[in-house]
Length: 505
Image 1 (cartoon, rainbow, N blue to C red):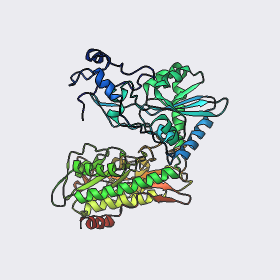
Image 2 (image 1 turned 45 degrees about the vertical axis):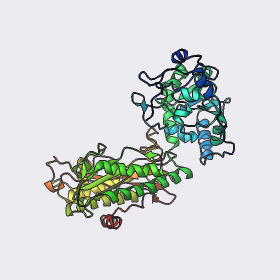
Image 3 (image 1 turned 180 degrees about the vertical axis):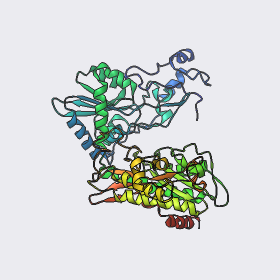
Image 4 (image 1 turned 120 degrees about the vertical axis):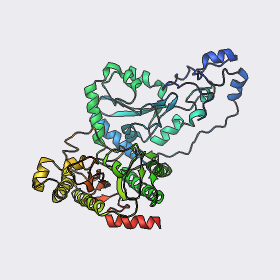
């Protein structure tokens, strides 16, 4: 990363228009005093001649023939639902600030999901504000960073100037793209501080915004606001379903990429597996939707194995849990457990087929009007039956094993979750609408049963120990049943073996 002249991290909200981020220098000494440089940077000072040169010779790059983003009509409808729920209140949804990874390098920025859902924008430091227009109704305003100022040198001297971070949309361009009036974000704090209406703010994303609304925001009311925003996303619209469908299709291609690098006569590093999938995620989307789990051999018995520092050896099972996040930030979440050598051993197949049967039972229970938990109960009951039949619970019946929850020693986790902008979507929604609710057309959830036999578990025969199997698919609730959005990837053990053979030639 080129950092030779870059200053220390700039404030998240630069000085307002009229308060120059950089005073025009008259000599090198004054420039050094007005510009914050890296302590050990190679350059110091800006001559008057250079400052004048940097003001001249730049072409106008304003884009005039812009159309609204594809989801603009959907975001407008979503904001209308939000407005109707909180009449007369000022509603504030920030996108969030970058987070430091080390010293002057940040993690890749990912905006808050609720902000994206309501705007379609992905800018850092931005704020959506719904200003009440009376007893009912709101005027939505988007606060964004404007183009960098050329006259005061901000575009090349500021740490987040456009010559460092890349071109930004002008406010006029953003208004066309997002269908919202846009204001310079450098005025946001003052505007928020000046309002008198009751305030609700989405917390934990922008401390500066929370400080600006001060004591007018109430943690309890803000918690209600967060719950409502999360619940708004329970049922997906056609734009969202198309995004999730694309995410699943791209994810399937990522799994194919992994199979092609998976060695049959030598070990394959888990990090190579992780990196191979990441290339597909960046090629067809924005990123991976969550940390890839590339768990080989006994690592597969650790549900969230993300260290990925082991080796997938012939004879092992590889549990790959990965998802492509689209450019619009919707993620797939798919798991396949693959025999590295191409064929399951007898004991591996026995465990795999039990998990597949459980997943089939779970998917069959996904339909409109069903209890949300029905798919979990169906899959877990199936696993309890298999575990009991294998003699792992002595003389107990499957009914008793299920009643006592003894099967959970080997299943550990729930069987699925909502999916969307977050891999565990709608996590803050009302429990009575979510896990205690009923399934509705447009909901998307994962079905992912698994069996995990730890290496040091002396309660099971030795042949089971170190085997971990999970199969996960992304299921859309339809008007008359369900659709498996990730069906491009085979699931039955014989189909998996045939698929591996075909990809490897």
